[in-house]
Image (cartoon, rainbow, N blue to C red; front, side, top):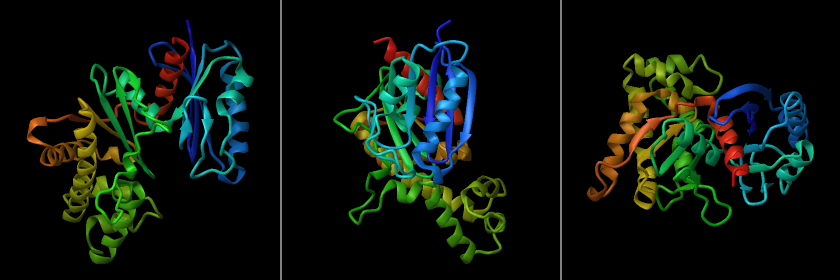
Length: 307
């Protein structure tokens, strides 16, 4: 049975998996990124994990989802916004020397979009637009099972779409850190609200408490959800008008808010799009969760070596 290696390289975590033709993960190695050790430390972890995953059987190819801009044609990293030491590094060439197999490298949001389109909530649909709401906001577009790149650098940077002429971006409104800041402001205004009480017990990452506050029918939490859904839908209306996706998939940490978020975004999106496009794309939540980039990386490897 053919197997493929999928690698997710992020600012806080590193995952290496071995998967099969169907995208099923057979084996996994996970590491915590030590930011102080920079890219060199991550490469050392990759060497260790790769050696363990390939000790019994050589893979057909390696796919990588990298957390930052890359040159997907060459496999060279442009830069990392979180970890020093990646700029202009030939990641594909380095991995090829280690494993002697074909290597494909792409932006992690593109790879996540591929994973959801082929093995997740987007199966059977095209085009599929994926947006991830985490520490930042990223996106990817898959058409007929292929990542759409356009001109270089080829990332669907939905997070940098402006919501006004003053420079407010989707990321500045809908990222995890943006919601954290909004909750901290709310704590000062309404210290007795359920969300304020929950958030006061957190040391950062206040957004993780939003779901619990919503379950308690907290009006303050509902206000933040409604603002998030409206801002996200407004940003996604541009992707809808330009690319006409059949489905839009929401991933990342904030997708854990569940169907309340999905339903609210779908309702708001209808109000921001031309009537000619109604009913518009369906909104789904990621079904692959934390495996979205590793599964997408396995699929990237599989498709790359089949060309």
